[in-house]
Image (cartoon, rainbow over all chains, first blue to last red):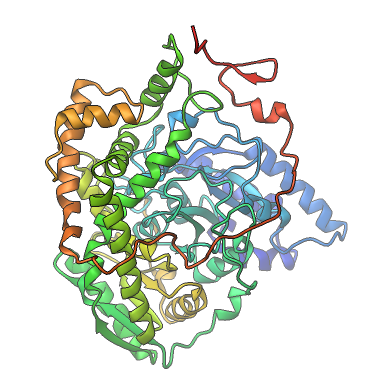
Length: 488
Length: 96
């Protein structure tokens, strides 16, 4: 088995036994990137020179007996909307094409403290707006399971890299499904933590009340390991929540006996493909065999979540993206005579079509005369959706739904129809509206060999319940052993 | 209310500091009509007794001491400026 095929906990085992070195591990990823990224195009930029230098340094420190974290010398890929000092952070936008971050995001500070190694920055939909990674201003990313299909989005580069063994794990961000949906479409594990669990400081903002950083990994154990590293209160993010430090690996227990799982029937309706539904029924049966109680329930209000989401997310985006004015950083037009020209021309030339669409929608729903009808109304419906979830969690430990109503779709299939693209997130957006944790777990492939994932949702800060159930499923099934991307 | 017009798109683009081509105005008018027609479904829900969500969590204001912290050097902060002069962001003359 090649090093790049291993999970991070397997790599750590090998490092601890002295069977490999950080240099060998890191090199195996860059060799793999050189071999495969021409087809997949998951990376916006790679950081080979400094990664290899750091790997050598860590190996010699380890050899000299210096006390190091067990994660020292483990590589990781970072979605290109998180700041690493001295490295370009583009958000896959022309607007930030030449932006070199002058500081580290909090998650990066935390990974630096472990001496982890950055492989590079991962492609994404521009400013994280999209569900296919086709909105990248640079190039689209391809799904390694079928190169003619999308990897999902917006963290498509992060998910495709893990699926194609070009990174052992990556960080993504999730505003309406941007970790979970690409994880599902690429057959890997993606976790959106509870809102407030991971600091957003240094994450380029899209919709601040919904954005959350999380891990994309090969298995559930790695997901718990990476959440351990990035979670925690940060005074620089006033929405981060001060919860006690937990070790999520303690929740990796192979037992779901007595656990109560609700399956909202609305997500297995006519909008969901027959093959995805069939896969969900198999997962339900598996959990029942393993001793969990699985019951049908209803989240009727969930059908309104996408409407609420696109009003609120675009409203917040239109405000957040107001900072891109061509003055302090980012793209500046060459075509101006006065200050207003700089603003207008820089924004018009720097933003892509989808970003402009969302700024227009957001500006509209916040504008005088429409604020009450759209924005305020959506905020009220958000309250009702949150309440419906908390009522369900009085009865159930977890909710189980599909992640995506279909498997990976063909490239450019939905590009000309924004509403259809928005509805690709229909199973994931309600979780962000509720501020809840949700995980995508790979479970099956369809008749064309494309991965299918199921989603586990818990109440706020109940990630442990998700880890336990996901781990139990993984231990009693064998998705990774049975299915691999074919690069067809 | 979803009957957003071309003129409204032109007005919104002005508020958002975006120049749109005639083609873009046509496209976005059509897109907004479709998206807002879909979003209208939220009007079916009675929210007369409901408050707006203010934040994603129940968390109230977090206060911290107002302390002076050094944030890098001026050079670090100016490194991404499209145009700078003598340690300042440079823009065209605003007042004639």
